[in-house]
Image 1 (cartoon, each protein chain N blue to C red):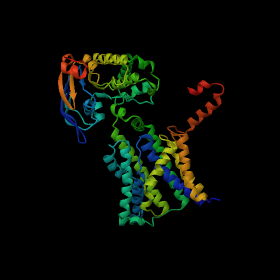
Image 2: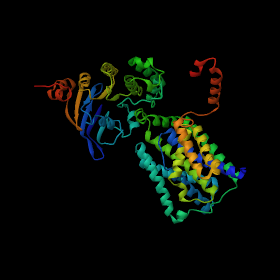
Image 3: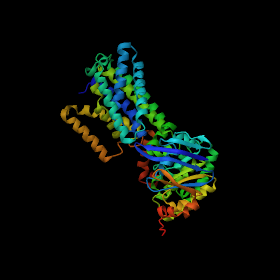
Image 4: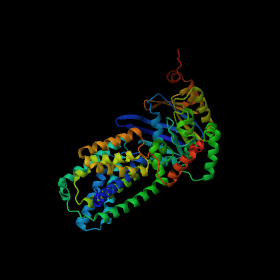
Length: 235
Length: 299
């Protein structure tokens, strides 16, 4: 579905991504794990056309346009890191903004119901100003807004960032539910254990390079990965 | 005490300021981009329009329009180069543009260098005031329509949260450059109006202090409010004139007034709210109903 080949991203003199290649198949959860500054967010930003890059990004066998608004139109949507929402609009209005590029009113209405089913908390707070929501609710709203653009592929950037452990569990359960809706998910996470336990396939990104890849369950058992990212000491 | 000639003169200057401020209000108040170079766009409009009427005997309105269009075209080039810069950096780039424009004009002999361009045809005050009012009414109506349209709302979305706007598929760059181009058009026409009111123009009229004055008016009136910009332009153009008898103290009072507003109302006079019949009616109703029924005021 999504194919990234030999992707290079530069920030001035800094070579942030060095020849990254990944493959995302339809209906899967693919996760990219790695430490702070490894280039995880850069990878997502490149795919969604928000930053400049060299290399090939193909989506359903077509080269992906290099402009953010065109990428959204082709069915990919990014849920940016850090709950970027319209703080002065209500929850409902925020979700409506997600459907900005669509005009199939009937389907939009259906998607509203689906999103509210997925996030009952948002339904309860439908008319509340989004800026007054808690961190977890804002994360849910950002994800809900993403779904409202009716994407095939969702790019999730650190959905667990700064959330309480209980809420992290809820968010990951919801990610599985979104997968069950038939969506494909590319998940970037620092919480490697959580990410690996729900993903089908995983890549490890270190200093801008893919250093390991494989099925998530394999990587979860891999000793070096356990030591580097899962906090286990193997002796 | 004040003759009509004097007052109409200030009204014309107010109209000229207001026109530029309206454009700047779109850019700063509704799109969230700060500019410290709009005097540069005024200068381009002023010199273009003046050259057209003096050298090519073009009718005034056509010359004004051409001044605006040339200024807009320059803004498209500037925008292409600088709009990818974030916040403060864009601001500094516009500052550079404004000063560069002035310095270029300072050195072009065709435009009279730093001595400026004298002998621009002028008009009788009343007649000219009518033209200024006509253009301003047109400009306000157009701006209100734009802001209430889908395009205007997209610009507000970019101001509120650029990243989220990008994520839902708004063409952020296109709306930013459109906003800049329209503000440059307004500034260009205003520059032309200024040239044909004063009868001469000099590069020094369009220095940084003019750009700053314009931005102050927008912030004073309140970001994201057309009525705020109108009130701001009127108050801040009249204030120095009313205070002219106090001579060297007037700019101190001007500064104090701006500071006072910023302390007591950081969002500016109007701050995102518009003054229209509906709002006034709601206010009156709340005043009357407030005593008996407090909860209705909130809903």
